[in-house]
Image (cartoon, rainbow, N blue to C red):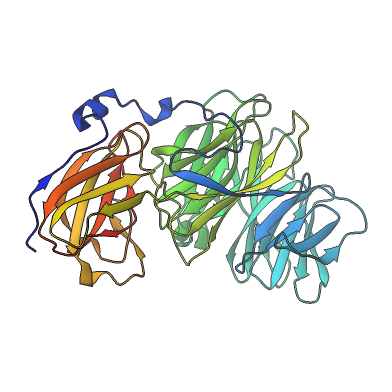
Length: 432
């Protein structure tokens, strides 16, 4: 490829100066209103939600909501009752495969299955103080519960969905915690302190491998991998294996709570949202096939969560967040002469690397690749790009680069890094 010689004018301060001023990601400033997203994300939905309800997303974009009196199916425009309960119970969880919902409640410890087509409700078993559950396979549900009561740890039970038999699968210290299962079959667990109020940084993120889950040995905090050992009040989890992220709700009653992003090794990646509600009910929804929730990736995945204002008495809400995508523009393209590439909505005080490839390689249909261990959203594989310039991003997330072009008709994308040097994704494409 015969590339032009570049002379770049960057609207940011010099890259070296920006990096010198960078602070650790944990020092980010508060975000203000509770429904405001952090840098790299945007809030795309805010819907009313029943108090104390549990829910689960369905593949068509609708959702199942169990408010303790009925299981309903809704998309926000229409609502249909699937099944009703005779009297109110406190919901624990809803898990579904799209044809059946498995519902837990903690008033009586009931575990029930509900046929989504017929509404037929079947009582399966009773597990006192059941809390959360994940589907391990077509026949098995893994449930966290504290049947022995308070201050005696929490049990993990397997529920056979055919025979309805419960079998003890493990025991962990602390109160019952949230469960998540990733696409590879690993099970993640949020372990909280038995003390109240819990001391700061006393919660842990644990993981059992798919082999351990499928094996016969009892699961415990002794044989789990400790992914992160200094968390605050883990209320819920969601795992984005494609994006290499674990989303964790650190909820503090009456104080500021947050949803944070960790990589799969437990390293800090940034905030998603912060505020005073209790964030729970985290669920990832792929709006465009398996994607990524990595900040700035814009890769077709949304994170839905429940925001509950227990202390201030506000109504519960169902919120949806998705990654932003930094937008690139090219002016003066297609003809010999001065061409300017610019980007907006990029990581403030971060950096960019401008990539070029023959325009004819751009198919128009983007995929999520990996580059520098971060999502690379593009219609061209990373190996086909050539680095042609780099520079810094200003405090508003803007940057630009200008050169004298002979009119080579290139596809252009920017590879973005945060101010502490982490690769986070690509800009939209523009053309010269």
